Length: 272
Ligand code: ARG
Image (cartoon, rainbow, N blue to C red):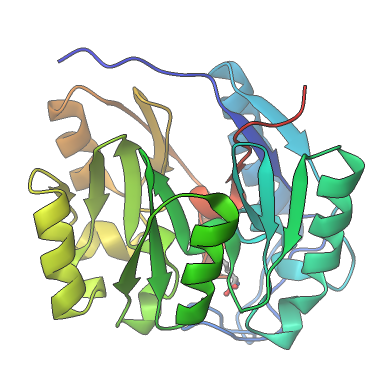
């Protein structure tokens, strides 16, 4: 099967102020040392890789005191040039939202909406073809799903996350194509598992090992799939399906509970 890559437009944030000094997910252990220089070096490599693959990458200025701002996927959800800016669940990240709001406004986005309910952008909202898969259970408020449906004009399918290690949808599921996903079934409630099995009977299923190294926190472009290099099982399965997996080391960022996809917000319909 031959796969075609489509150039993408991303927003990223350099981890200049990266550290783990609070804990809002089970991966974050403030007692464990972090290395901001190493985080920056790993992130720089990811940034470079996206450029080498032909994608366009814009940057948002990292702000001191917001160590999780590197996880740009959480800042907003952008569909058809409409940016729905996040409303963070935890106080520790709340000040990131005005920075994203300002960024989208200054870039001339057609519609920049402020969310009324807690939602963490593409951490929990993933566009698959015409529909949005929306996570809830840990961060994004279930009531936010109807708001996203209205503001982004796409049908939303609610999925319930049940394992605190996979607290955002993008830690448990990745979009491979308009009708193709890969996911870790155990991260979802039994009902959501049935929903996923019915919608995507042919999905790639991740093992415990691949999920635990954040293998699903991947950025596919139609052919290439950038993912954590430790997710070797997943990489083999993707290759067998005609994709080209590209492993990368972002383990320093994993100390905050984030990886490749968390660093990458897709700008769909960005103003020229
Ligand atoms: N420490 C961050 C948090 O807990 C990590 C965010 C990861 N981002 C993601 N899109 N899953 O909010």
